Length: 342
Image (cartoon, rainbow, N blue to C red):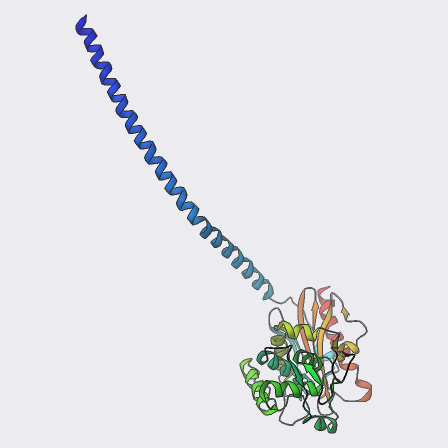
């Protein structure tokens, strides 16, 4: 019996020691596990901002991609017959796809008249950074404008005005004095400014266009095509300031030394339209043009059923009764789009 008891005691002792070793191993493993878990959690905490940033970038990129796809999706099957228009030159461009949908002698040279002022203001916007700068209109070009019966916005020689006021004056009422002053402020002379206009035309791929002045006054060497003008307007509309100007029906020029109460100018296109509404949309803005040589011209754009379109018409005969007809052409073309979609 004593031997049995001793054997039990030895066995119990061995079990106790084994359990102790197991507890020590277990305790050590637990500590190691907890340390590993802390290190892993710390790594996850460090990686979390990177993960979230990556997720945001991926989501933003996907959204941007979908937006671009939607903006450049194929144009709907719409047939517009520009032969119905009275204007001998016309082109219709889908801004979402950038494609020409219809053309009527669109690649033939025309005299662009005051549609030149689209390029004038775009060039000035890209080269004059302080649009709130106040300048004094020069006396040097007014007599020429008087002699050539150029359209004016209402500024007088020696009057002070801001650059942005001159830009509104060039587009809305087609003020030639505004164009000449913008040219001087930008380049020091109209000749140097015209060089910038032609450089911009080359960059935009407007191979059928050539500029000789900033005003659109007739010059036999100043020409464009209605297709070029459509692409030019599309490029200009991507400038937020230009877009705001050309979509304005009117603009109030602040008080100056010559006009202490200021004065309001009106867009020549909107002045000739009682209602810009169209089936499924509306005409958003436009620039008119006229000389005896060019006839009546209009570069306009409209939103119809969620898409934007540019229509340029030119060459309508300069008869007294025709003043409204080139704008009627715009409605005639745009309504075909709305009717086809409807």
